[in-house]
Length: 443
Ligand SMILES: Cc1ncc(COP(=O)(O)O)c(C=O)c1O
Image (cartoon, rainbow, N blue to C red; front, side):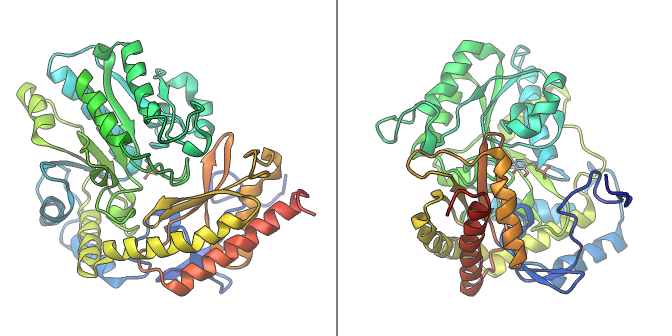
């Protein structure tokens, strides 16, 4: 073991690089490098780094009112709530519970589903059906309902196990089928699980409309989400959309589930809600979900820092900027250009797939494109791509989980330029070459 003491982070990490500033799409290291943020941090940054307005709004909010418990009304909370209802949330989504990030937002969503059923006298409904390859958060409960194999593994003994449905991962269909002849059979698997478990025991189904980093920007086949909606309706099960990554314009529309033509019952979101300027998440639902709780005097429990006034002010300002500068349309347009440019990587002998929507894109690297054989885990291809990218001052996000490895995610700020797209794609291509060559697989 090296004898230098570790102060940050908790365990020794090769990611402990010091950043001291940021502007636009670039991060600044202490040693003077400008690193292109091709991943918007963790698919968070949308209006870009270094904007003064959110920082000033937070300073004003904190100066006026540092803290009151979440149920109290404050101007910052009201302003954000009104903006969300007016400009962002799907029709009918009138109720909101704010928290400090995605895990809390999802945890609130699954507890809310349970509380809803209990309030309606259906005490037996507690199971939440998730899917393999999906990530829903880092708390014990959200890890349990998710399918992030690597992060779940150490915690399996601590939570009550619930079944997982197969993902809509058409490149390697877990059911061995192909679209469109499959008729979206992976959605039927959700129904099979509900029937097997007994619908009277199932509270909710949770899904990301486009699977974020753990799958790597995996889009649903047409009709998948509508089928999921119909299945949930048939069995009195609530449908929760995890839009922590996809919410607030990341895929070029407000919420990705809206674009699928079937609204969920509950939406959980975070990340882009404040574009990274403050920790905030939200759980949103229509009146019909809140009313049964009200009838029995129940409510979702707040976290101490839920709806923090400064975080609300930051989110309100970021959403205002997204709107004023028409950045969601820009995410759509630049997303198309990024997608087009990434198509060139499809020619690469080690790229199995280029996928995604809007400014949420990913590539999957394989040893053999014909058989889809992956590189061995010890080859550490993902880390090598990241390191090679970083050596050329570009930061990519490592996707995948467990055996589903070597997925690289690109999710730049919505203000990304054509030149920056060109740089990140050219560097990515070279980084893949470097990573697979150092593995000794290419001569
Ligand atoms: C789809 C999804 N849900 C939930 C979460 C958890 O969010 P957080 O890390 O803000 O707690 C994440 C985080 O990456 C995510 O990608």
